[in-house]
Length: 600
Image (cartoon, rainbow, N blue to C red):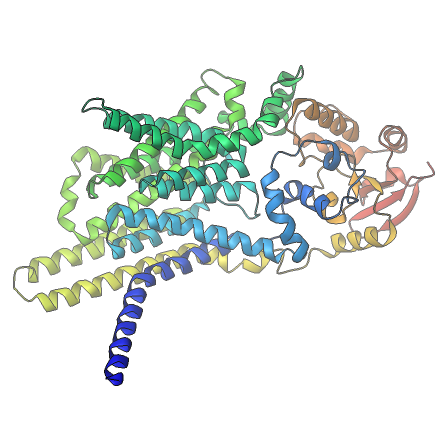
């Protein structure tokens, strides 16, 4: 009896393990694909926006750090959530590897949220997985870049990374009608990055408005209204809480006499590449093509409520992007430009790419379904693909055209083989052979799309060490500079440094007068920042090109700036340093020279 019990238990355990393995392996394959995609961004710390967004974390760990730095101590920092997240990571792992690992985890989990959407749309794990891998082949080629230098992910972990993470999970839950989960993730996305908060309220609000209109077509009744009200509370309640937490600095951007001048500085001088669509008008071609490809490709997919919700959300989000673009081109409205509506454009691209791949794979499995496309649909598909290839060529991205060709070729090839197999054996009654051949085709499709992904990812993965500052040392001239500063200057020293040298403040942990990267958002602080930049470069600043004025620094300007800003050291590049030879030089290497001006 005991032996029989053991055998039954073993049998149940074996069947459970097999069942779990059967359902888990697609997620494992997708996770490996997503991890490779994440590695294409490199393993980095500190880098780019981290020089700005992580300053508060440094001061949380040690309040004496940068205690004399204007930007670190007197400017309003508007990403408090990222400070809470990264402070313990920097405390326990100051090397930055924990930051890079978190970046990997966030990108992989965000990618798997899209796989969940695919499963919800087609309910067929092979179709979902193959389409997922093909989708990330395309995303790897574009590196998730979209309109106005917006992106899903970046080489540096930053607040927008968490905003992407929250929004992708919010979309997955929205498609699955998990309103509270969707709302919670939406609120988290907005808490980490206020730009997402405002734009997502508009996009999801418009989508819910359309869905509510459809739900109420059969007439109003109390039960429907109660369900709709509950849905709105679940979807937008967490975002309202996040908005309440962030409303003070957001209101401060308009409650100032200098608001208009600050906007001019930000939009026209500091970041025209963000706020003037005419400077990135070329980006709207691939954005439009991905949208059309996705909507048209969805025509062959099963007509489910999940697909309808996704299409409605995508069109609502695209409407927000296009509305913002109209009111910053045809009629320029500064408040609309400040919303930076293009922040959510990459998500429209992702949905378009995903639906295109889902439609292609679905037709590959069921070739007869291509007839669901009308002649107009086929023309739109052809025009969109040609538009994408043209845009990629103009941008110098030949890889996208190659991957598109491989993707279409793979779909046509396997779709043709599947059609021939079904036509040859579909009605023969040889079910076992037919099943075996179909399984073989599914494996071939997975291997083929994995090859396409490898083709797309390899050029970036082979340069992983070069693109990861955690895997190689910085240049000798910079390393020597920071070592000397750490060993020979006090922690409360203040430097006059080149405004284009954005890493100096963060890595040396020494106060500076100003730099171009660390730009405030509140009007009064923007004005102060702009005055500092003009003082340091010694000329009116109309764009980043004017920063070269720092190279004309002479002793008289140093004396005047020292009186105003109270620094002890001057950092200049070798070459322009000749103008300051009369000062006390205390350090020099192949690139940098430092002068001690405490006695000036």
